[in-house]
Amino acid sequence: MMTHTLPLIDENATAELANSIARVLVCGDVLRLQGELGAGKSTFTRYLLKALGSTATHMPSPTFTIAQTYSDTRLPVAHIDLYRLGDPSEIETLGLEEYLQHGISVVEWPQNGGHYYSPQQEDADAPTEVDKGGFLTINITINDDDTRTATLEADQTWAKRLAMMFPELRRAQSDQARMDWLNNNGYSVQQPPSCVAADASFRSYWRFEHEGTSKILMDAPPPLENVTPFANMAEYLLNNGFTLAQVESIDHQQSYLVESDLGDGTLFDKIIAAEDCNQWYSCAVDILTQLYQTHQQNPNPQLTAYTAADLWAEVARFVDWCLPFQQGSAVEPTTREQWHDTFQPLFDELMTFPQTTMIWDYHAANLMPQTATPEGTHSLALLDFQDARHGPLPYDLSMLLEDARLDMAPQLKQELLQKFSDAVGIDAEKFERGFVIASLIRTLKIIGCFERLDRRDNKPKYRDFLPRCWNYVAEHLKHPVTEPVRPLLEPLLASAQSKAA
Figure 1 (cartoon, one colour):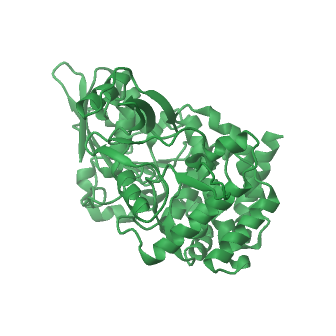
Figure 2: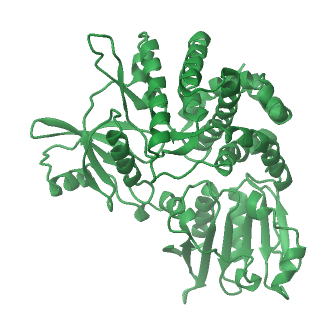
Figure 3: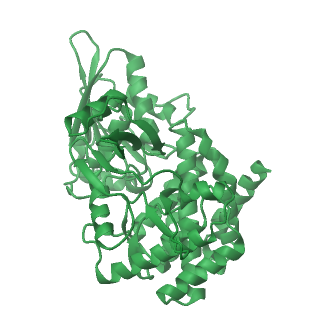
């Protein structure tokens, strides 16, 4: 449980808090508003609704009606006031259960609802993905000077989101902080490390010199990031013969990690430079084959399994960040449930494929070519694997062959598909079905992610990749396996392509 207290010196501060929370809300969230009468719970809710896009001129407190729903928002919202609730069992008659999965529940006087809107017992090992809904309690107290104090109590699903909202809740990132850590941990540096790479996450990579040798510092501020999964996976990969940087030092608490420097120039860089990369791509497919074979003999016990629920979370990111702005209103809970049910057969078919060690972020920018041998043997080093898990065999190949930032010649794609299906012993036609499903789901997730990066995080540059993503969707909707989802996606595809024209 994470707790954070902040002053609300005036109504503008309440509006600012509501706006910050609205930016990171996901379906399934329950906001529990506590405080005495007049503390400002309904005021906070009105600002929250406005921050979510509502243009309603009248937002009544549902003291007598118990619940008021809103759909002119990014996500569907149920504003619930349990002050006059006679018995917790009455909640079952309100028809609001769907908001616990497919909407937002903002609940005043949640203590009157018994277990219905109470935080659940948490699993310490459960993932803390920011796309997973959870409980945030906001306790507003009235001070002697009539200002307010808000105390936020967050479950695991909200820990990262609070750290995104409040910089003081995450470990600081600065040149001085990096230098101090290095000098305090056996590395003598006189100059700040130079930035090598940063991505859409909060991780960044920094090059520095120590005793005449170049090294890389991974700066992964907790609780937003965590170097431990990376270090654990690196050990597994090295023990099984894969090529990657050597982890030399790790601070699990502060989440810093030092590794050897593999140099510059990823596979992505070679492709952009118009080099012939067919052999490198073939090598990348060989790595996926090796991962599968290793998994069959020695699966990594520290990895979690990717499930059908995770596949739905990928599609849901598209539903929640793309559809509302396409149609100008929230996706109603019943419509969101329809999307889930329509995609479920595709999830089920993909999960019938053999499991493998899935890198999950397996694309050209995360692969670094090593010097080819005189015999022409190619070798690639793995760079990014902290999100690895056990998952269906076609997933990583779909990311490699259908990169949001790169085009691949159709003939090469077919050759690599055939190469991999032959290597893992799966009929080519059957494997293609799994590949299409995995790529469609993953591409929808990426479209949703790019929309979120623009609208929530003010990173519009990723929109440049959207036309290519929609082209992937168009290609996959031609395949028979996607027939059930065509009625949902084809109108959106037509709209996206007309805007790009």
